[in-house]
Structures are given as structure tokens and as C-alpha cells.
Image (cartoon, rainbow, N blue to C red; front, side, top):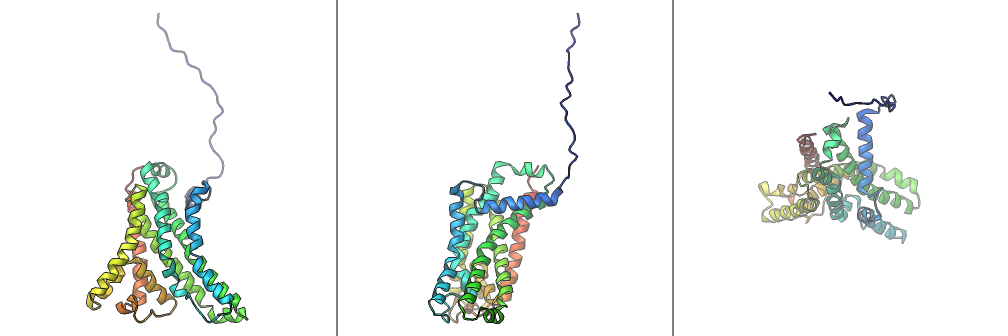
Amino acid sequence: MLNRAAGNIYDLGYRRYEGQRLGRRHAVWVLWLHRLRGCFGLGRPASSKIFPIGLAVITLIPAVVQLGVGALGARNAEVIRPENYYRFVEVVLALFCAVVTPEMVSRDMRSGTLALYFSRALERTDYAIANFAALATSMFALTFGPQATLFIGNGLVESDPASYLKDHWQQVPEIIGSALLLSCLVAGIGQAIASYTPRRAYSTVGILAVFILSSAIGATLLSVSEQGIWRYSLMISPFHVVAGFSFWFFGASPEPLSQLARADVPGAVYAAEAAVVAALSFLIFLRRCRGIKA
């Protein structure tokens, strides 16, 4: 006797989704917002917030010191000038990048979750743009925020804040421009390194090494000779590049005996290099993302 397998058909009521499809643009926006929150540990345990938020607070200390001096009556005593501000917090910015970037990039590379991202509407280019924009935005908060605090505070301690704003309004685009270029440079370098070092510890060390060791190497090469090609040795150091274009943005000159003054490289050259390095770093990160199979 032939036995046939019996089967039943159940109507579970599945229906096609007929609502609004938000598409790629919304996916990029959501990923950017998610990454930006992650940079400061928002939505995570308290232990994840301590380091990034603590570093963000530290970047405000020089501005608070300057404002304290002004509040005590020494209004003409500029302990910290806008063009020098980043020199006081450059190590803090490097630490922030070294801590946040591996959490953002290396974890995805190591865990294989990128395949899940790319199996949906999100393209590889979208992923790279959203991550870069989120990290650059968080860095911008750490660079523009203290400078804006310093600018507003200097105006408030004056007897006539409106007159101060009228005389110093040109600092606003200078602050925005320098902070934006610095943020893109640091974010680009950090993500390019993190994308090729899946281990978070290695990624953190690699990012710090690029920022700190390059500064020491550039200064050492400049000390060998200040003539010919050696005068461009500081351009291998992101810290010196930032200092160079900061003076250019604010229309100031470095101290006569400083390394930047001895190198005597135009500030516009540092700004152009920062823009090129930021763009190339993003392209390296994008190429790495495109090399991952969904």
C-alpha cells in the first residue's frame, strides 16, 4: 500500500508591507545618529560614557582657565589665544579618536556585522560616509565647543559685549573653519587605521602611534637641518599640521623660535595638506568597506 505524506496549509495572515519606505537617505541618517551617540557612550552603560565624556570636559579646561583670568580683571592677559588652543588639547583629541574609532569601526570588521548592513538598502559608500560624518561631528564638538566657549566668554567679561562682537566677529568663521578641518583630518586618519586593524587594542595603539610618534619624528628631522627638504619634515606630523593651519586661519604668526617658525612653511600649505590627507584617508576607508563581501 502506498503511503502519501499528508500536508496542511495554514493561513497565518502574512501580508506585504505597504507602508512608507524611507530608503537609503534615512538609513544613512539613522546610522549617523547611532554612531554619533555611540561616540559619547549614549545608550550604553555608564562605564562607556566616562572616558569620552571625560575627555570632552577636559578640552574645555583651557577655555575655563582663560575665562577665569578674565573674570578676575586681567582682561588683557591672554593666557590662551584661539590659534594656540588646539596645541593645549591635541593629545586629548588623539586619545578620544583612539578610544572611539576602534569601537565604531574595528568591532564591525571583527564581528562580521558589515555583511548585515550591506544586505539591506545601505550601500558601502553610505556606510563609509555615515561613519566618517559621525566621527567628524563628534570631533567637531570637541574642537568647536571649547573655541566657541572661549569666544563667548571673552565677550561676556568685557564691559561692552556688543562692541567686542563687532570687533572680533571675524573669528567666528575662523573658528568654524579650523575646527572643521581639524575634525575631518583626525577622523579620517583614525578610521583609515582602524579599518585595517580589527583588534581594538591594536587599533588604539596604532592611532596613538601615528599622532604621537610622527610628531617626535618630524621635530627630530627638523632639528637635523632647517634647509631644503628638511624644512618640510613637520608636515608628516598631524599635530604640527594642525598648528600650522590654525595660525593661517586666524591670521597669526608662530613664535619666532618655535618649530613652525623655523620650518617657515606657509600656513596655506598645511591647510591644503590636511584637506588632502583627510580625503585620502576617507578613500582608504571606503576602499576597505568595498572590499568586504556581503
